[in-house]
Structure formats: structure tokens, C-alpha cells
Length: 134
Ligand code: FES
Image (cartoon, rainbow, N blue to C red; front, side, top):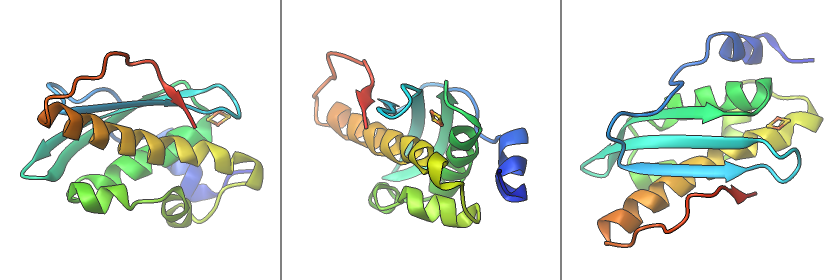
């Protein structure tokens, strides 16, 4: 059901865990399946220098999050905000259609982590870290 590239990313996921002393945290849930994704980022001079994920999601969620975190490390925040799940899926050479919704988690969690970072910088602290459902 999954291609080799997806299986490789699933079996050897990169950037699993939580960035130490992270600058931004994004937690989102998938309305389609109820799974949850958390991404933490480290930011220096508006560039993402580290990103890690934790998920209760499936193989597709793990493979796309591993890939998405690899892709955003080294990007500016504005570049990372433009990363779409479609680009991640293209990089992985496709997902079964019924698993496409899983790839949205990483995109949304990265966006939420960047928003969290920018809010903290602006002095706005999230009162509630419950996941948003996408
Ligand atoms: Fe929930 Fe894939 S089935 S993230």
C-alpha cells in the first residue's frame, strides 16, 4: 500500500522527540481520525535551526512528519509557512488517497509552532495547549 520511500521514512524516522528549550510548539489533531501531532522548533534569526515531532498518528503521519521536519530545517519562518502537505507527499512520491489526510498534520503543526513562536515573541502566551483539529 505504501511506496518504498514512505516505508523508508516510516522505518527510520528522523527528528523524533521534542527540541530542547524549543522556541515554538504546535499541536494539532486530525478531525478525520482523531490522531494528534506535536512539532517543536528552534528558531535563530528567523531561521528554523531544529524541528522535532511526536505523534499518535499512523505510518503515513510518521513518514510525512519526518520528511516535513527535515524540509523545514534551514528554512526561514516565511518559507516554512509556505510548505504544503502536497509538497511533502510529492517528495515521498505519493501516498494512498485514503492516507492523504494524515499528511496535513505536519503542515498544520509546523504552522502552529511558528504562530506560537511569533506570539511568544509578541508577548502573547497561549492559554491552552489543547490541539486544534484540522
Ligand atoms: Fe490518523 Fe493517519 S490515520 S494520522
